Image (cartoon, rainbow, N blue to C red):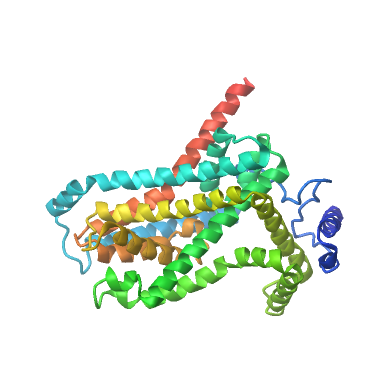
Length: 425
């Protein structure tokens, strides 16, 4: 009964806040007891999602531990496979002296890779602090550092990176940021990151299709496995880009054509219901439409100032460039080099990074584990000519792009826990 009450309360709130022309089209539904319904927004406050409890406080059942065990075993299996492929099998025997010589010659590139990783975090913090200041009047830099690090941690331990944004909203609201504004900042930040990533991926696809810049033709040798199978990677990349474009395109469509976008959503969910992929179409309509409305309102809030929106977009583009740079400098550290000027070489590796990242985004494992490891290893194995260094390069890249966020997140949680205990004494 309480769920039904909350559901209908939120439905009425949503109708009141929407333009009259489309409010009447908001679907109605009886809330299912099994479904988690979000509470209605407070009067005068933006519609916002429920602030969750910290993930660490949730009780974990047997299924959680089973999936965690399977996830760990899968990662171990992938690491063993790539290690055996690199150090044994049909590959040449590793030459320790040659490997040491390559690393000694290119040692400074690993420093650049670490700097690119750190710059990526600082850019994320800077963007969040900037958007928070424009929304609340205070930058709250220290709080934004914690929020970004914890968000990265939960993104990388949950399937499809689903845990980061809810926890970031929780952390901001718990530390003095109004819930509606915290929701607006986090959703806007995520939206801009997703939008710029999709735009960069589309640019990579267009450059590849026109032959202006083609990593498959310019960095992989003729007849190599990666070059031969690159068409398969392209297909998965196109699918990943299409799915990743759903939220940004739907939100932008809602800006221009609210009634049309609502009709398209209802039609799409109706089809999914007929395919038995959606259990309760009316309730799903409500949830999806609420997400779109919430996202569009958040972006409108940021877009009130052109310079706020422009600088936020620049932050998001720079974040993606930093991620590409981690891949590039890691490869250079382990001996990758082609006869091209520095900027073109970086662009080719960035294009490859975007192709692979969009392709493996289809995999629902935390941090796209397994798929990312194998795919990047396949690329590294052909770009790094010294036997035995491809696996090491993949592990180094994976540490900087994945494991480091988990380690830093755990240290941040430990720091906050110790700080909380000291304050309670």
